Each structure stands twice: as C-alpha cells, then as structure tokens.
Amino acid sequence: MNAARPAAPGLSVHQVLLCGALIVTLSMGIRHGFGFWLQPIITERGWTRETFSFALAIQNIAWGVAGPIAGMLADRFGAWKVLIGGGIAYALGLLAMALATDPLGFTLGAGVLIGLAQSGSTYAVIYGVLGRTVSPEKRSWAFGVAAAAGSFGQFVMIPLETWLISHLGWQTALFLLAGTALLIVPLALGIRERHTVAASTGHQSIGQALKEAFGYRSFQLLMLGYFVCGFQVVFIGVHLPSYLKDHGLGIEVSTGALMLIGLFNIFGTYTAGMLGQRFPKRYLLSAIYGLRAVAIAIFIAAPLTPLSVYVFAAVIGFLWLSTVPPTNAVVAQIFGAQHLSMLGGFVFFSHQIGSFLGVWLGGKLYDTTGSYDVVWWLAIALGVMAMLANLPVRETAIRRGVQPA
Image 1: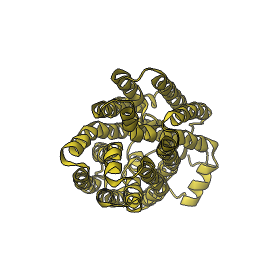
Image 2: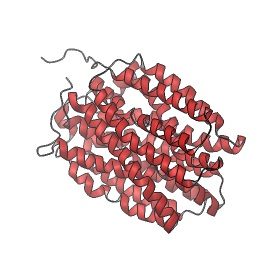
Image 3: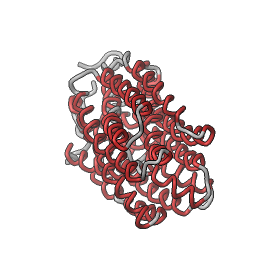
C-alpha cells in the first residue's frame, strides 16, 4: 500500500538527498545562531529579553501554523515552488530583522516573516520529496541524512555567525545572511518534480487524510512528543548563551557549546535514522526523550564549568534532532507518502507550539524570577512525559478498507 515510486523521471535519490541536504543546511544553520543576536540587539535597541524572546516565539508559532499549508502546497503543486518562496521570504525576513527599530517591526520581520520562510524551506517539505523518491525500507536512513545536514549547518554556521557579529557588527551580519539564504532558490530547482503528487501516488483527498490522521491515536501521541522536542531544543538553543553569560562564562564557551551541539547532532540524527531501520521507532523515541531529561537534570545539578558545558552540549547534541527521522518515518510508515509533507507539517506544528512556549517562557520567567531554573525543570518534566507518550505508538500501516492485491 505504501510502496514508493520515483517522484519524476531523472530525479534520482542522490540528487534529492544532495539538494535537500544543502537546503536544510542553510535554513537550519542560519536559525540556530539567532541566540547570539539577543544580547547585541537588546543592548542597542534598549529592549528586554522578553521582547527578543517573544519575536522568536512568534517565529516558531508562525512556522508551525504555516507548516501544514506549506506541506499541502508542496504535496499538490511541487516542493520546489514552495522552497523558492521560502528562500526569498527568508532573505526578506533577515533584512527586516536588521532594520527594525521598534518591537513591532522586529516581531513582524524576525517573527512572522522568517517563521513563514522556515515553514517552506525545512524538513517537512524536503521529507515529502524524499518519501516519494526513496523506497520505504530506506526512508528512515534518508530522513536521517537530511536531518544530519541540518545539524552540519549548525556546526558550520554558528562560528561563522559569531565571527560576523564580532568583526562586522550584528546588523551587517544579518545583511550577509540574507544573501546566503537566497542560495536556497537555485538549489530548489534540483528537486523539481515534473508532475503533481496527487496524479501519481493515489486519490485520497486532503480532508480524508486529515480526518484519518487526527482520529488515529498514534498520530496524536507523536504530536505530543514533538511538542516536548520543540520546547526543549528551542529554549536551549536561544537561551543557553545568555544563561552561560549570566554565570560568568564567556562567549567562546557559548560558541563552543552550540558548535558541539551541531557536531554531535550530525552523528545523533544519522544514528537515529539508521537505528530506525532496525528497531521499533517508538522505543527509540522514548529513549531519546528519557535521556534528554536525564542529561538536563545532571547539567543543572552539577557545578557549571566550561567542561560541564561542553559535556552537556555533546550529549544533548547527540539527542538534539534525533527525534526527527524516526518521527517522520513513523508518519510515512502509517499513512504513506502521498500527503507526507502536509501530515509532517501538522506534527511539526505541535513542535512549534512547544518551541513558542520554550523560547517565550525562557525570557518571561527570567525577567520575572531572575533565573532560568523553572524552565530547566519544566524541560525535564516534559521529557519524562514524552518518554511515556511514545511507548504505545503503533507503527504498522493503517488499514483503509479492502486493499487491491
């Protein structure tokens, strides 16, 4: 029922993997460094941490809201068109982020526009093409490769962005990143599908697909787990540099920590994709969330030193986006590839609700209590919840009445 067929004549798996990986490298690599703009922007503009955090929270929620729509458009009209729009919107959002002089303008640029851009230039759109191009038994591996590319982007872009900020200033750095984001446009042409998905992979309508997915308990549990993933990684990614600075550790420690997260994330996501082909993905996801909770608890309980930061970064980096390949592979395994970008977008929407709360509460509770302690403990509790939620997930293909022989 879920057998994959080539997305288009001449569109090879390696071509899709290469172009898709490079797009994710750029889109995810740029966003992972946003935490380094917090201090210079609020200092120059005279804003609070909550102002900056709220803009990035809106970015995450806009990404989540637009994700299913971008997925629908990609599934129906072709991912390459959505990716081109995403690349252009990304560049415009970075320009607006650099030029905004009031919180509203900053929120519209860094929040709404970049959030919309990310919905059309990241995992859900790329995974839809991969799901239609790669055979089912290799999907988990392919998703792992694409996720690892996003991790590689973080490893490469973090030191580049900190260098640009320190040597050229935060505003010029954003101008240069805007030009870099435009590279997504030519790369999108490399995964151009030559006919619509609906014409080649089935006849299930969008309404039928949504009713089926949202009425299926395993889909609901996957969404719950992804909510926790978003809360944890975005809180850490945005607020870790400021948390370390508050405790007297220099910018070099923050840079090194985020680089290590990106480096070990490469190995973690690829390993998760490989393990997803061999073991039940629900157990893999439960283990990842449980280990995250343990890693965070040890980190905040241990004395804070550069060494403890680097060890934590390596461990949490290995677990960082390792949820992405098995989660999306389970969705494809249950529902097939026809509406994969759309369904992946809805799962990711729950991720972005968690991201919104993680980044916003980080700034809000810091301004209220003067520390990040409450948010760290929330991240631990949510990790335990996600560990338990993934255990009953059913991974078998859903039965849709009588199937043809």
